[in-house]
Image 1 (cartoon, rainbow, N blue to C red):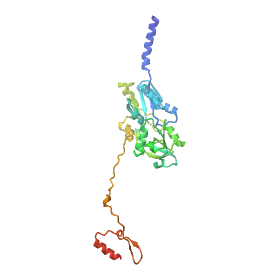
Image 2: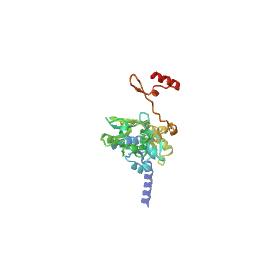
Image 3: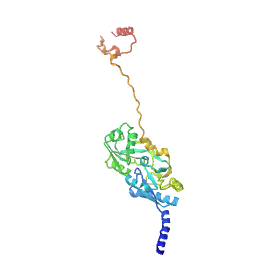
Image 4: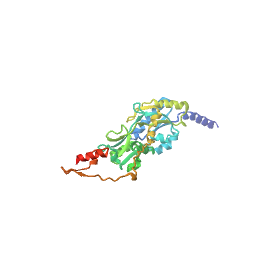
Length: 313
């Protein structure tokens, strides 16, 4: 009995601190950000976890995801997620946006359609060619259709193939190796390539919290910590910033923009009014040149026409 009581008390004593020390997970699923490899991607999110632990007093663990399916399987256990704007717009769901990654304070950046260096920069020359695209949702191909092609033709009809790749590094490699003719990357990843098209600025990855894991005062503490980080990646990300709804919506807004067409009405000549006129031809007696007096100049009356005709003859 005494041993049982001791065991129970020990379990209770352990249970309370174990609850306090339970890890919160900050996850990164932003395949449009270029990293040298998986180790570099993991190192970046682990720096964020370390900073969160310091600023909030909570225990944090970093986790990077390479595939959308893996992220979706784990998302209910995540406290914070850093997601590409297109993925958040399509599948953010109950995640609450609290910040954005930034590049020198800017939370948007243009996208560029790139081709191999030395190749044409004219889009029309890539009809029927291959496009490598980071497309974890259908919004990416919709963006290409709306922004690049002006909704005149679907991306799936314009290109012979759209290869959906896991991340931007694979997309870049596909163009370099000649396995694709075009790809779309953030401005800053286009060095050494031919730029075919530059889009309007779109949102950098969005930072969101899982309200089922974080709420109230704790959520506000985490939000403040996330908005004040200055952790850089190996690319152009220099820190984080407050959430900007207008910037965050840019990608989806462009993708959902429909080009308006203006009808041009052409005058139609009824068949009944058409006259078949064969121009008369006169011969200049001196030079033997054939001319058509009706094409010389406009003559308003028959009397003046007769006078002109007499002069010519």
